[in-house]
Image (cartoon, rainbow, N blue to C red; front, side, top):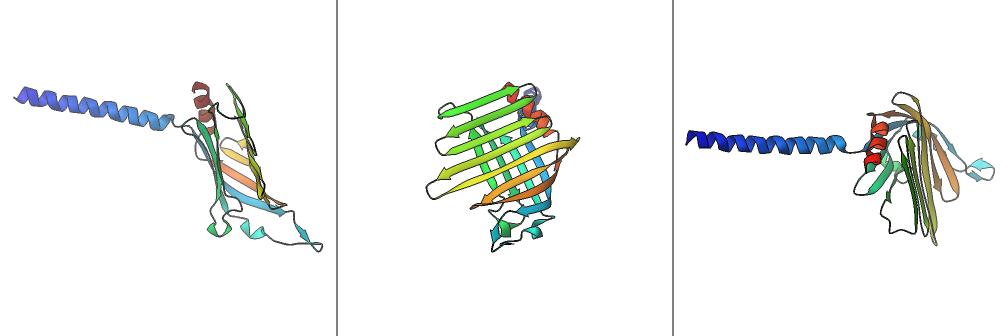
Length: 197
């Protein structure tokens, strides 16, 4: 009886170890890039009677979180401002599906580069990632309006990155200069992950 009970708990323990190993390995294998960026400068190109119509200088010092993630055969990329009052000014969240049922898609994945470009009717999406640069863009043209948002980052030291975020508000582009910190070696891990998928 005691031997049977020991065998029972041994089996339970083995199952638990296998489950935890699988669970932890799946977490470690998740491919994502996380950046926390600080707005260092702003420039709004909008004129009204010879003067800037809006001043966004108050956004200096605010933080933007940038995330690039691979989920279910798609690359999700997002940039979000931590100031809820300015929602929509920067906030971008979109994904590029890697499924083949779209009009036109080009994916190039090598040992040191991931480049996916997709065009679908009125939308144009780009994500390019190398060990030292990130370039993401989303553009959509509809009958009632259009969206044009992008960010570009360049590594300048270890996990430190710099770059810009450009967002069009109607016909007026606003540019943010960014200084970013990567929370991990996510860029290198992401490229390696994409090679295997």
